[in-house]
Image 1 (cartoon, rainbow, N blue to C red):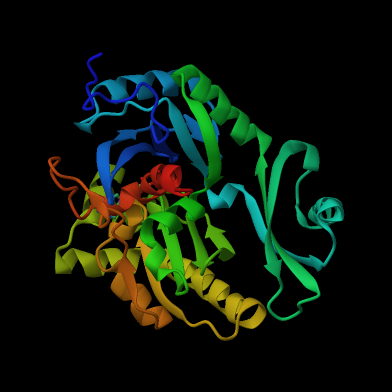
Image 2 (cartoon, rainbow, N blue to C red):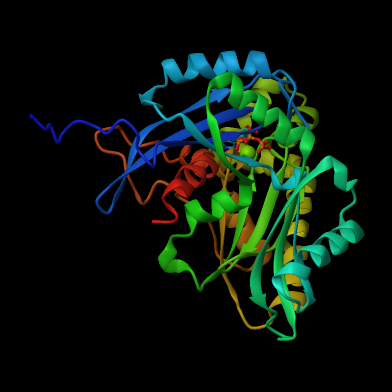
Length: 355
Ligand SMILES: Nc1ncnc2c1ncn2[C@@H]1O[C@H](COP(=O)(O)OP(=O)(O)OP(=O)(O)O)[C@@H](O)[C@H]1O
Ligand SMILES: [Mg+2]
């Protein structure tokens, strides 16, 4: 018999694509492990027409599936070959919380979690898929347990299941965007450090304080589109012109743009600040947040990291989710586009997590 060890196996355990279904663009990333290296198989971004995704629900599944199929065929960098997929839902559309409950055995814990959830979740339980995971005894009160709890609207999850079916993809997992971006930007060696991650998208901005787990989350419906609309309104420009101006790095324009979007930036800063205070007061008094990592398209807004550094007095940088991924021989992703793929990279990396 002639063995050809160079031939790829028929089924590969890590043949998974991460797809970030953003309101205005879908991002896809497929990775593979080669020894210690994480190599890029393919990646790309597809613009999504307005109203294909409304409030997180895919409202035009057939049309979106058609666009994604074409996009996979002519993806610019590498190829997407996986038949299994990891997906995410924006934090602004899910309900996540660390619950602290009196210690019980595993059997009673499930009932206690459900009871507690019905008290705090502002939606009918029948309309939600819920999931939870035991973390361990509470830091301050060892007689209580900490449990990570998440609830996602069935309307969103079911629309994802329909899309995946139309694409012939098997869903392996659905998590929140913040879980994915934390995985992509905080390498294992940094665990133990407390960082604040912020995903700045088109329609919303979501944020989390993360040590070994996501401890606290927040979101605001201020995103890149609000900024563009505000620039257009204040500077009396067409939307396209306002979008171009927003991306420009010219010092003169920067001042004009900054003044136009002052209210929105203040709003984002207030939301982040509120979360930081909550973390220090209610969750952990000792762990100091060492840095803020920005990702998502709006993270590339000129001067934004310097703005947060100054206003929040915590070093803020745009995360680079590509730093641990070997992209050779594919040309490197331009620095400004790099943070847009953070969520999709985190989803793709989930495939390697249990190695
Ligand atoms: N270089 C840049 N500077 C500033 N903003 C940018 C830049 N590049 C893209 N954006 C903005 O990023 C936004 C799109 O980001 P992203 O792809 O992360 O959003 P999304 O995932 O589709 O939306 P959401 O997460 O809200 O559902 C747009 O508003 C766009 O104007
Ligand atoms: Mg997004």
